[in-house]
Amino acid sequence: MCDPPRPTDPRPTLSVVAPLYNEHENVDELYRRTSAALAAIGLDYEMLLVDDGSRDATPDLIDDLRRRDPRVVVLRLSRNFGHQAAVSAGLDHARGAAVVVIDGDLQDPPELIAAFVDKWREGYEVVYAVRRGRKEGWVKRLGYHAFYRLLSAISDLDIPLDSGDFCLMDRKVVDVLRHLPERMRFVRGLRSFVGFRQVGLAYDRSAREEGDPKYSMRGLMALAVDGLISFSGYPLRLVTYLGMITISIAIALLVWVFTDAITNGKAPRGWASMVVTVLFMGSIQLFSLGIIGEYIRLIFLETKGRPSYIVRDYSGPRSERPKDDD
Ligand code: UDP
Ligand code: MG
Image 1 (cartoon, rainbow, N blue to C red):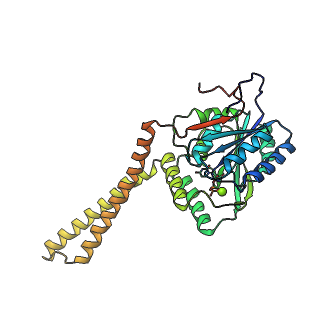
Image 2 (cartoon, helix red, strand yellow):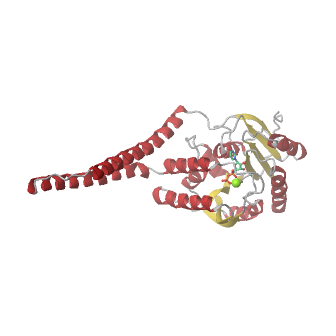
Image 3 (cartoon, protein in one colour):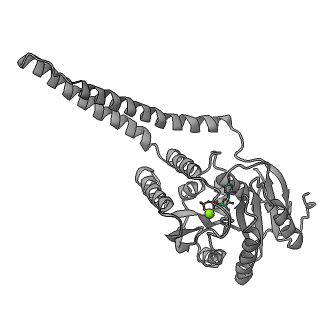
């Protein structure tokens, strides 16, 4: 299904990467708005549509687009690998001198790409969008709010508050990201980790155009936990602190019990206090085990060394892929 390699296929200046999972209601509109926005910028581009194992009409629709417009490049994964993996796949296959990552549900306005490009021309290597407002339900908004603040409080990184994956990255940055060893990717965290000259642009995040969010509440929770665990060792330290606090309390109680027993000759009665203490200690231990388990899970997943995605096919220019897998 791949085009034959043609040494003349030049690398585009811009690659726009959109992960798509069951987005058949949005694909055409995404294509239309993004093409219009890119045409207005006037740079040559490719639009890399990553089909993350969609089970609806998305694959046919993007094949259609590819037939009509050779600037559309289709990358199909062998099954659903998840948003972050789909973005990683897109970054690996994008050929542009700058790469834009955009959601396929039109929550990220393609019209903002022009502003990204302006900043890029000014010399910034990473331009990311910062959400000013959200038009999502309050539970989700509260969750996002808490997550970003917790993450920046406990991680060693300055992950910009409320920045999502919508961004432009210079080729240099993309190459660095591609060669990071970890497989489990929390793209917005890694993007912040690599450094370079970065700038945020504020925008209003709209509601999803059509269809349902592909992240369930559980999926978002998982993303949040992965983000926290892979960018912070603090939860492990928290376990130690918790242990120290409870040991102090235990020692204080012990001293009190003994002095009371010796001076007053009666040990404290109290079934209730004992049950509460046992339950409290038990839950702290379980919680701590859970935290440690999360780290072990990540270590386990990384050491297995499985790829974070598998490509079924790629239809687009083969030649001059950026320093392929060097
Ligand atoms: N997505 C994907 N694979 C998945 C889940 C989502 O490629 O397993 C895509 C989805 O099609 C969309 C983007 O990732 O283009 C963001 O997904 P969604 O809108 O569900 O996330 P949210 O906006 O809630 O963060
Ligand atoms: Mg969305």
